[in-house]
Length: 433
Image 1 (cartoon, rainbow, N blue to C red):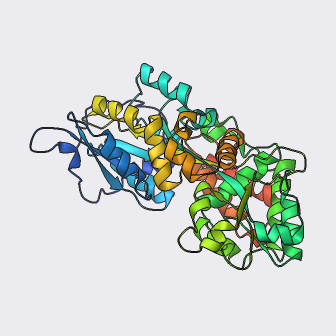
Image 2: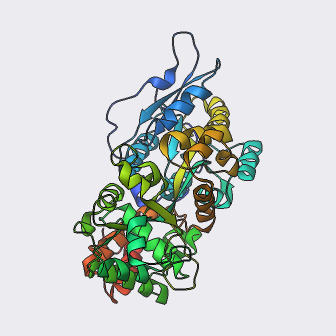
Image 3: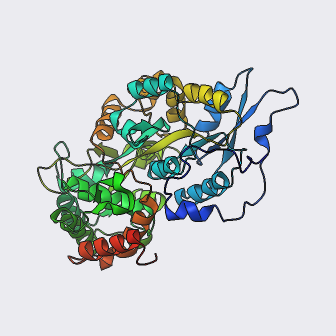
């Protein structure tokens, strides 16, 4: 099933990031033959998906036709492990992958390596017209749409209504990180974040720096020669927020290992006060703790600097077609169905991962699950969100930032400078992660 070594590949000869180049030498563990078709000769398109509550499987079944069947294979939970598994197979020319759910940080890396089949112009135009601008930006590399936006997630500030009523803070106007840390510290509450040594921590750091008006890097298209801008006044503002929370009574006991799940657990406890987290939180406690579910309020992401608009995190999934696939045309047809407004709505209904298009928000069952003002907040937050830098070197940049900003209790005014130096050295190949 493997593609012949002599077969030309899109992007051949382009410089590939070190992680992908190294992936070519890794051993492929086993061979998945789902892409070979069934006994009737109908092609089976294999879609590698990130774990969810059944949304992708549901739209795969919906979009299967007499011309092809779409089956799903679930990738690991951790985004970096998803990347590694796909990169290993793609680098080896494995043609058992047809469709892939790709996390935004790795889109540029896969496209730069030539792993993604070009999206036909008519389909690309349709996808660009239907998708939010932030979703399109995250799906674009070198001025070309390289994956199809499927869902676009964002974070908002969740709060316990009972807590804010008790302390008297006005949540009808924008609040800052300083304000929520202070009020939680003084009143026995916690501020939930994602601060383990993983991608979620960099998402928070990126949002803090972007909210202050800065960025992690500039000139991302320059690849390893991009300008690292972590050491800046905006980087200092971000470091201050992290240091203030880590040193306060509002810091959860598990701050240094906190992720989306653990932060959600703390928020649902008696100590819960504030939480930044993704859209699924609204229904997270419906069955496990209905009293908490009724106590959840929501507002815009906290401002890093008072008076400056917050830039909440951007997350999501784009669907890419493997350039190794034996069924590229059929896969592109499938992509059009999988990313339709109805499919995005179905996925959001089942998973809580919001659509990448305004049309997806018009899905009627979705309107019954979420209040109109919350659906509006999600869309406003996506528009204001700060995507992570679109660069094929994101894995190196993210790992270097994790190494220098973790643990949160170690962050101080020197962290941005140390971080910038380390990122530059990693990108230049002068040091190893």
